[in-house]
Length: 90
Image (tube, rainbow, N blue to C red; front, side, top):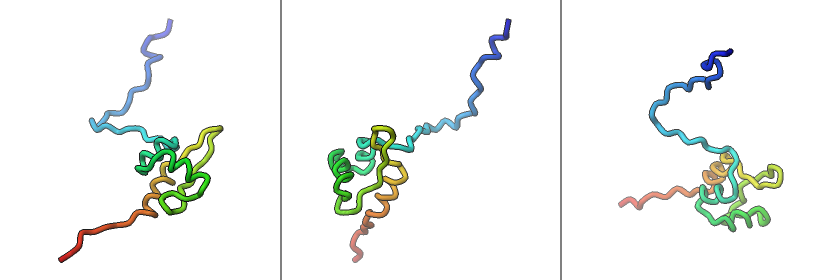
């Protein structure tokens, strides 16, 4: 008869108490649109037009039959098209 403790799950390292969500590397159209604050239909349309908000659309990939956006591609696209604004001085 084996000891019941031999089948116990490995112990997890101590947690700092901070909540750390798991962020998926590949996003659905809905998740990508939410991240960019655009409509799902705009992001979906950008796959055929190649344009989103008058800029070159972010890259997308197919995983099986599903369309996905790499999180890093979405964030890089947002950085590339972002316009920095400052309050007027004076």
